[in-house]
Amino acid sequence: MIKRMPTNCGDNTCPSCTAAGDFIFLAHHAGGGNEKDVASQMKAALEKVKKTLESVGAEMNDMVQLNLYLRNLEDFEKARKVFNEYFDEGNFPTRMTTTTDFIDAHCLCMVDGTAYKPGVGNK
Image (cartoon, rainbow, N blue to C red; front, side, top):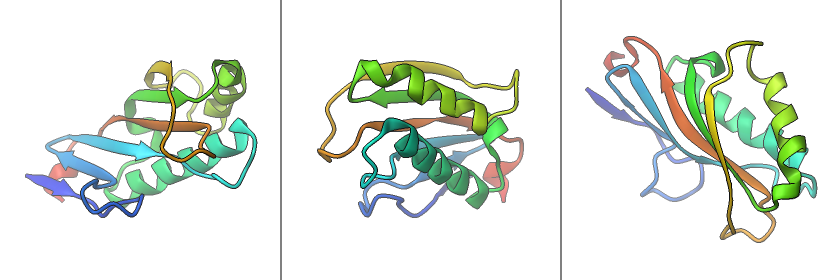
């Protein structure tokens, strides 16, 4: 069974996540565009991820892979430190980090990824 959740970004062509079988594929999540620092934006983005996962019965520690997109490479350490607030020690998802431009000129970071939760696609 495939279950698509409503958008988190106002674009109806982009579900916030798709649950397929035991996997949850997350769309891009950004947040705190009014904030000027990457740590605040990371917290807002990860709060949105948390809310999206909860909408399908999963949690942050169910994340198995995460992509971190940064506008500025210099923000990496500040962004990375925020992960400690959202994942249990020793339970961090694998991560790929890259830099990019964003459509929103105020966006400093964005995340997407994959979670695994047995039975989630059958709910």
